[in-house]
Length: 86
Image (cartoon, rainbow, N blue to C red):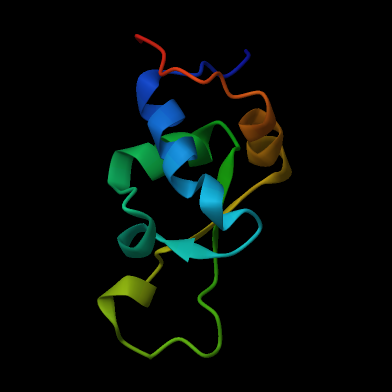
């Protein structure tokens, strides 16, 4: 089944577009919880380990690092300019 681009996924992709291949956190990107999990479910984003230079035991670094997958970057290239209505 082909993943559906809904308004939540569209907004999440727009918000994390600026990070490209860079690892980002939900705190820095402003994209949280269900939106990131939704992108992970369709294979457009993936969780990654925290960089070695991250401060230990900070809320931001505990299992909260993400990166766009190749599929996610491909979707970004064909992302429509307006948000879908759902």
